[in-house]
Image 1: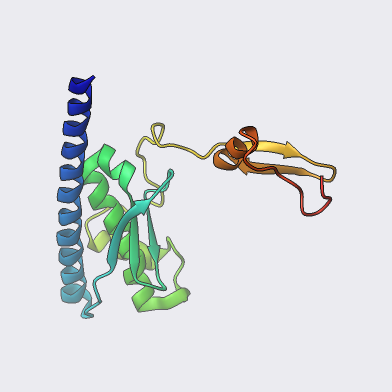
Image 2: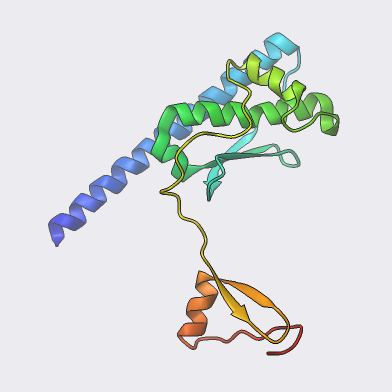
Length: 173
């Protein structure tokens, strides 16, 4: 049992070290791509914050309102550097396009595609990475007098353990 625990600790340490390396590579890549934007397009843009907190099957997300890129850490760990490069370029292209065109440009329109081409990446809308191993949220159906409700796994477990109950706010069932 102790050996299994030690092996699990070694694996977790290796995964953590790998993630730290990929985070460092992300920072460097963003700086390189922003330098390319400044050189080719003549505009110095602020470096976005890059978070590795995205979950589910989405590879990445660009948030304009706070200049942030979110990366799916599970997919990053599974697919490594190629995933990082493609996803960061894709999301940074959204931020660059927004900086130049605001909401006048379509999310995956011609302006965005031009930035992707500048970054040396194919302007594809969706990633092609395997997502079967990514955890999905399971929902449980609860029926009341007026409709069917979808409860999360956590809420369902609380109902099963009799820690709480579910009552419809519309009909009271």
